[in-house]
Length: 163
Ligand code: FES
Image (tube, rainbow, N blue to C red):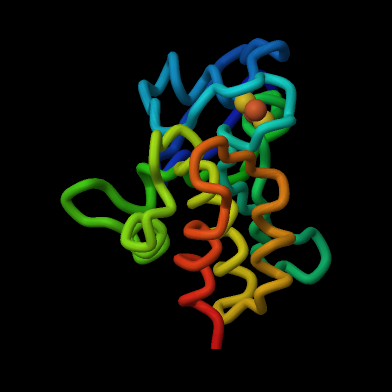
């Protein structure tokens, strides 16, 4: 129906009737769906802690495309027919995804606040480039701010995916 917004979060179908155009994906994830792994840092697109992956079908090539996005700036109404993946969608403390595991093993997570965003930026990169170069990794993480690690351990963990 025309008044219905349909999208997917971690594989679950979401149907919103008369969705509020002012609601951003970040608050929807955290408050409505109680998916609090995605963090609220700056609220203005500047820190990357709210990064999630959005997947959508290219209208012409019909290929699925994956993008990292800052959920604090993304109105849910722009997500019709798209799929959102959050850090909870790729792994959890019982069973970590390799991105989560390798960043943690390299001591790339200290206070941990930036980690889900880092993980999702890296995860989206790997979906597009399974063996990324160092400069691709640095580009992919360039929007994610960390105040503890000095970045090197995060990069070290991520570089284990390179050839
Ligand atoms: Fe900082 Fe979204 S909360 S970029």
